Amino acid sequence: MKKLLSLIVALMMVLGIAASAGAITIGFSQIGQESDWRTANTDSVLAAVEAAGWEMVYSDAQQKQENQVQALRNFISQGVDYILFTGVVSTGWDEVLKEVNEAEIPLILLDRMPEQSTLDAIDYAAAFGGDFVEEGRRMAYWTANYVEKIGKADEELNVVILEGTTGADAATGRQEGIMEVLANYPNLKVIASQTGNFTRAEGQAVMESFLKAHDKIDILLAHNDDMALGAIESIKAAGKDPGEDIIIVGCDAPKTAFDAIIAGDMNATIECTPLYGPFVVAALEKLIAGEAMDKTLIHPEEGAFDAEGGIVYSADGRVTEKAADKIGERLY
Ligand code: GYE
Image (cartoon, rainbow, N blue to C red):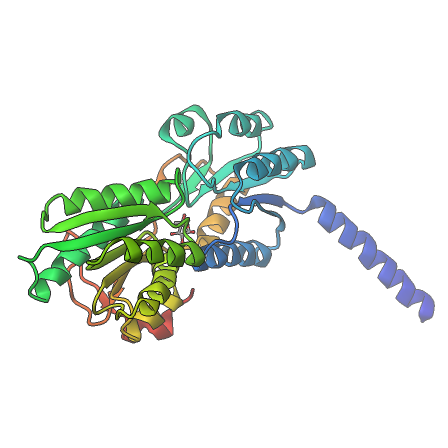
């Protein structure tokens, strides 16, 4: 009996080793952990890959491009089967991504995209990311509609902007969308715009300096909700009522922003989903099955949320949903 048991254990070990030797390995070069969005994104991808039974080699670059370049080269030398990549900024990837191509490791791009000239020059199997320009437009449309709703459409209102990481398309795209729409509303005047690096701490610090420099701030547009949440702390510390004295609109739509909207500290958030796990698994399944994929950038469906629901947030006539009705459904 003992002999049989040890035989079974030995057999299981051999099979286990064989299974892991033959397992599909995926390298994931992630940016860091700067926001609620990023945490949810990492969790989504890791959980989906694990559930699919593949092996993940995960690398957190701590916001440094050179760490990402190193991680990609490590993936190449380790001989991973597939690479998932989100670049902290949009430039400077040509060389290392060509190395990935030369190693013939299929590449899937997630979230932030390299600049167009890089996308044209390299091969990649699939790309999933947010429509950042559209998100920026929605932030500005929501604001303009809300200003009208509260009867201030004829007032001159001062806007401050907390930008995301400089050089990231998530920041340049959102800024472009915001400025494009605000150009139609001359009463909404941008008086300051500065990076807060997508973090709560920097959002708080930069807002504090905005409040010191400007007596009249009516609207804050934050490229992500973490910076908005940090800014809310500074606004309270300055003795002002966030959501009331200063209209606050963010982007991403994590649970934490819903809580702030329900508490009346924040006015709206435009969704940018981090939940790419299912997209990644579907793409990998196709690649493994030898099905062709193309370079089309796929944007997930996204909503917008505020306290009351119903304010048009885009030129296409879509409406927001009430945060209080949706909080129970929030996945991140
Ligand atoms: O909005 C922000 C995160 O690239 C879309 O990065 C992403 C952005 C997201 O840090 O919260």
